[in-house]
Image (cartoon, rainbow over all chains, first blue to last red):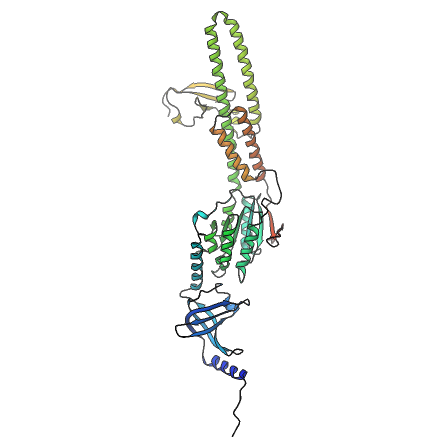
Length: 399
Length: 83
C-alpha cells in the first residue's frame, strides 16, 4: 500500500490556476457590476453578477485607466477577460481586459449622464446662474497644462488682441489618473487668489477618454464655487463636457475661449474715439444753448429799454452797449476756456471740423439736425460755424 | 481671498475708465448742465480717454505663473517655450 500523494495548498492552487488558464480561452461575460472599488494602486476590483451567481473580477491599472472614475452599482456591462485563480486566496477570478456598456463609449456616456442629472438637480446648470464676463479684464487666469498647445493658443490670441492684459497661469495635468483633482485644485487656487478677473479652464482636443478630467465632479464643483466667472474651453468636436455645462461661458476651443475674454484693441480704440466725439458734441450744444439764451436776454433788455425811456435814448444806448460788451466779455472768457479744453482733443473732434469750414445745423434747442426729415419748409434753424451761429430758414421742400 | 489686486494702484482700471466715460457722455448728452459743470465733466472724460489710450498702447503681454498651495500663493514670470 502506497502512501497517498499529499499536495501543498500552493501546489493545488497552482495546478488549478494552470488548468483554468489553459483550458478556458478568453471570453465575454455579461452581468451587473457590484462592489466596484478603485484601489490607490489604480487597479479596480468588482464583481459581475446575475440573479443566482457572482464572479470576482479585477481590472488592472493600465486597462482601468480607460474607464470613468466610478462605475455605478448595477450597471449592465460585458467584460472581456481570462479566468484565473488568485493563488494567495484560492479564489478564482476574471482578469478583465475590456469593459463595455451597450454601444460605443457607453460607460462614459452613462457616467456623464448621471453626473449631469445630479448637477442639474442641484441647479448648477440653470441659465440664470451664468455670470457675465468682465468686459475689459485686467488679469486673466488660465488653468491648463503648461506643456500643451492650448496655453500657446490662448497666449497668442491675448497677445494679438489685448497685450495690456496680465495673464496668470496655473499649470495642471489635464489627462490621466488624478488629472481631475489637479484641475480642480488649480481652479480653486487661481480663482480664489484674488489676482484674476476671469478664468479660462481647458485643453486641446482629444478622445472622449482624454477629456475625462473635464467630466469629473471635482472639476464641476470647483467651477461652480469659483468666485470669478469661468470659461470652459475644451477642444472637442461634438461632445459637450460637464465643465462646459456648469461654466459661465462655453468655448469650443482654447483660442475661442481667449477671444471670448479679451476684446479687440481696435474696437476699443474706435469706441474711445466715439466717446470723445460725443462728449465734445454735447459740450458744444450746451455752450451754444447758453450763448443763445444770453443773446436773447440782451436784445430783450435793449428793446424794452429803448421803448420805455425814449427821451434818454442815448444814455440808455450807451448803458446797453456797455452791458452788452460786458456780457460779451464773459461769454468770450467761457469760450476761451472751452477752446482750451477742446484743444486737448485731436484733429478728429467736431470743433476741428468746424475749423476746416464745415457748419452744423441746430434747432432752437441746440439739437443737431442730421437728416432731411429734420427740416420742414419755413423752419428756422441756426447754422453753427467756427465763431458763432447764423440764423437760417428753410425755403422749399427738402429732398 | 485677500480682496484686491497684489499691487495697490491709484490709477483706475480700463474697465473703470470706460464705465465712467459712458456715464460722462450720457450726462453731457442728456441733461442741461451748467457750463462749468459740463466743462469739468468734459475734462475728466478726456483724461479717461487718454488714460485708456495709454493702456491700449502697452505692447508686451505679461505672463506669470501662480505657484504654491492655495493658502500660500506665489506669482513669478512664466518661462514660455521658445517656439
